[in-house]
Image 1 (cartoon, rainbow over the protein chains, first blue to last red):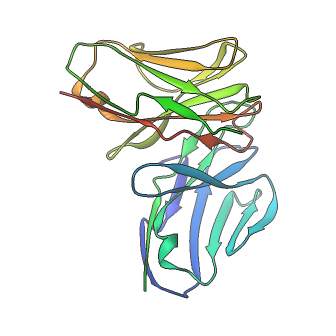
Image 2: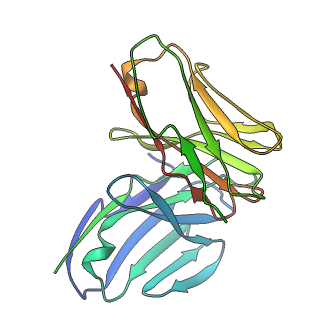
Length: 109
Length: 113
């Protein structure tokens, strides 16, 4: 079992739909990252969370440290949101990084 | 501020050769991490450097090595290349640790023939 699990693996949505991507982890962590990777490979950090909730535009990320679970929500999805979304977590007190397998999101117009 | 830069962007090598990849972090960032991305394994952590010291290393053979210079620029080296080393190699920088926001470079795409 991977230390960081994401679901779903693939997601297709219609423009305007509300989207949720989930991430569960089995290791002790001090922070969790949500990353976005577009075709071509470039990765952008969307959020870094250690507790609670963060919002940036149409994106919302939440984390529940006790339940070892985080979610990424996209409101009013748009075709430009099509990308692979990856959650990642460094080990507690350790400067490494464990990655989920990624969720490939396709938003159709 | 300029972003994270990586050179070269593309590289073709043959089995048995060695390769050196370079990463220049954002000015002021002292933590540099390296990652390998392949279709089969996804993203995997290679190593992390801070102030010229390797603080952590992922589960990769000794053929994979790296270093960091006093200006925080980092290099990684892969010796005796294997076909399975074909991948996108990404570096990311942050101020001090991987528990902070990571800023990724564009990556170096390595093809081993």
